[in-house]
Image: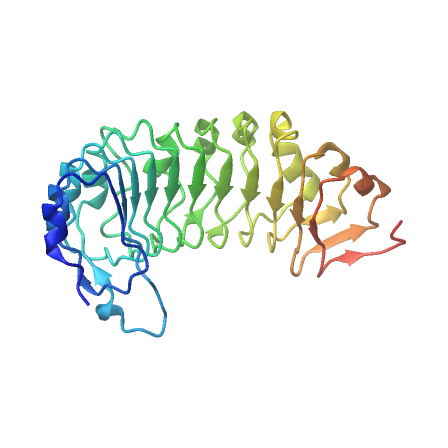
Length: 290
């Protein structure tokens, strides 16, 4: 069933949520008539077994630029692979605080790495997960969105090294860049992120000593950090010499795959009274668990 175009005549709407309603075909550009919209959620119901061309799609989202009051945009799993200049379009909406464009088919050919004039000054949440951007992690336009509090870049086929520009995001509370092909140690500029609550570097090839990784985490966030995931990050070193400093942790996920984390589980882990999840499988641990 197609998304009905008559929705564009409901011009007093401020909130429209049509997520996961199994709509197919083109997103009607008449939605651009809803100039009072504050929230638009048309996230598509997505199943890998369905034919790609039978899902919800758009090849032109220029109508979004008419929604100047929009604060929350969720077009997750809507096929935008054929849209040119999508970033320039959303950049014309200065009120945007939440932008969720996960699994939209955004790619290297239609996603520029830079914005000449960045207008997304109040954007707090950005989710671009599972888009085949297939580009270097740096430079990229999102490192300059300093208002961000949540950034999800999981499975975006990012390559190269972790960018020093990460340190620009001083307000960041949630950061996930899991499942890319980034290599090398995390940058020391991470020290600027004093508000971090959740951090996921899983399945990137950090390839270093776990003590150095922890030393590069911001000391000023240790009372806030609740989730830390380094699954499959190819780390080595002595097991968990740092745990007593991360007293707010409730999930510590250190499934290190084929790495060689050694030593015994320190008794200091007992001070992590908020810990609910601890994963240490596939390591070379030894000794007695107190």
